[in-house]
Each structure stands twice: as C-alpha cells, then as structure tokens.
Length: 477
Image (cartoon, rainbow, N blue to C red):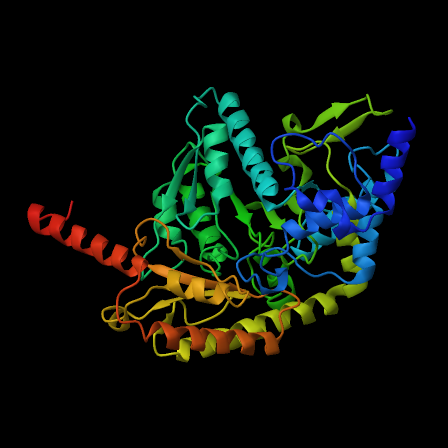
C-alpha cells in the first residue's frame, strides 16, 4: 500500500516532460494499465495533433473554424447536455425550435403556425437524408393509395453531388439519376433533369453552393420546368434543395433571388449550420414547406426518458452545444452581422478569384463567384509544356501550412483537374495576400523543374493510353 502511494505521489508531482510517459509512445492497441495526470494526458493528445495544418489555413474545409470566446464558452458549458433529453433540458428543445423558426423565415416559409416544421441534424448530410427520406415516403404513400407499384423509386441530381446523396441512394436503395455537367453546362440543366424524370421520381435535388465548384443550380428555372411537366403528366415531383453552403449565403447577400419556398414545388430545404451558419462542427438544419409534407412515419416516440418524446432524425442522442452556438450567433450577429460577415467572405473570395485568374498558368472555372468559394485549372496551352500539375502546387502550399485541395471533376469532365479555395469567417484580405504570394513563389519553383513530376508523368501516360485506344478502335471506346 505504501509503495503504491509513493508511486502515485511521485507521478502527481513529476513535471510533464520529466514523466515516464514521455519516454513511451501513445497507446495504439490497448488501454494503458495505470492512470496518469490530466496534464500529461492533455500534452500527449495535444502533441499528436501539433503538426497538422492550422484550421484557419485550411482552405479545403467548409466548416467553421472560428467563433468568439463567448460562443466557445457557451458551447463548452453545454458539452455534457444531450439534446434529446427534453425532460431534463426543456429549454434546449425550445431553443432548437426557435432556431428552426429563424432558418425557415430566412427561406420565406409560407407556414403560418407558431412553430415551423423542421428538424436538427448532426450536419447537412443528415439534413439531406431527412429531406430525401420524406420525399420517398410521400411518394410511396401516394403510390400505395393509387394502387401502383412502389418498388423502383429514383431521384434526379447533377453529377456534382455531394457524397451524402450517394449514401442516400445506397442505404435506401433508391436509384440516383445524374445529370452530367460539361464545359457548356456548368450547373444542373433543368431540361436535362426533366428528361430523367418519370412516375417513380421522388424528387429533383438542385444544389445551392455546389461542393465541387461553388456555383448555384438555377432553382427558379427548374421549378418552372417541373410545373409544366407535372401539369402535363399528372405527376407531383417536388424539389428538395441541398443548400448546405448557399442556405446561409443567399438570404443575406441576394435576398431578392427566388430559390426558396417562394417557388411552388420547393417542399424542403437543408443546410449546414456548421458551414456558413458560423457554428463549430456538428450541426445541420432541414425545413419543410408545411407540416403536411413531413410524413408521420418519420416521427419516433419514446417514454423512457421521463416523458413522451417525439423525434425526427437518423441520430437520437446528440450534443446540445451546437444549438446554443447557433442561437447565440443569431442573437449576437443579427441579420446585419451575418450579412457583413458573408459579404466580407465573398469580397475576399472575389479578390482571390480575380488575382489567381490573372496568373499566367491559370484559368478560372467560372467568370463569377456566387458563393465564397471557387475553383480554377491550368490553361490548356500552358499544360502542354509544363512539367507539373495542380497536385504538385497543393504539395508546395502545404509546406507553408496551407491546405488548398486539388482534385478531378465529376463524371463526364473527370479529366479536368482543379483547385478550390473556400473562404470562411476569419480569413482576411491580408491572409489572402500571403496566400497569393505563396502561390506565386510555388509556381516560380515549379517552373524551374527540368523533369516532369510523378503526377505529370501519370497524366501524360493516361493521355497516351486514351489516345492509343481511340486510334485502335476508331470509336474512342
């Protein structure tokens, strides 16, 4: 007993870097046999993340990387609160309903009741899932009432979809019909989308703030095309809008733009609170046009938490901290505060867009910036003689702490390699200038290369293979 006591006292009084733990690797396969001090445990976990990109220099992520100290304190205070336990934390549920009201009204909901119809999600992915499931359930019930088969549902979306829609299709076994993009059609073409619709289509999904490009689909044109199609065929194909990014941009910067519940066939909209909603990760919102569009089959009740609790969601338990964070931001910033932040992000994005577009190797994918993110590619003429690719530029920038992703575009234009910048709250004009300087320096270094990089060799090999296949078959197959 005395020996164990002495060992414990020694561990407690030993400095962090004089401790035995600092001589051993962090646990990988099994839990350590003995406890350690919180200071040592903190340092071991902290050190393991030390070499990562700083969040504010991560221009690949869409999620919020900055909130003020009061918001952070509020969220830390709520870290132990489980949102679903309404009996113990009833005010959190009311706060969530208030947030839904605010979001629904930002999107011009026509619903007249005191509490608008919506649900909270862990992120926009869960919110998308809920919007998609609701469309599927409404379609299924309608088919049952009509005495028609309901085993082959499908939905229509552009090929620039976010991966959640692939998950939705796989998990619920719903056919995903994709409208390809092209150099001439940078966003979802309404006519092409309508051409893929039939009596089994549960919804069409336009995107406001496409992850791949930052562009917006034309929802107003799609709504008009669907209205004509539905009147002609007798179908009732609705629109679910994936507004993960644009849902918190358009209401503040383009309030006159008709993309939301002002349009007839828009029955649900989802967004990400942890992107341009300006809350730390773990928050999504989905709102329906009216309560009648949320199927009762999606509401589940339990009474083992001390009262009858009804919940709509794929997750059950979830932290309440993000709800407090969202409500705080609404109160703290107000409409004008959100507008100012989103405006600044847009202005910095436009500045970067214009400056990168002026650099001799590059060409912007789109002439305009519709959300605080954009992509660019290497000019075709320049690419023919250069010895590097955008993947090499990504690696160069990473050496200076920046994370600027390079990737290939979706099906039909998958040979196009682009880079993307996402501008968020906390990214200033001064930081933009630093980034531009680093891009110019990296390009200057890459242009000195005497031999092609591995990524450049890989691309050239791919081009040669395609060319030989085309020559051999004469059909390019």
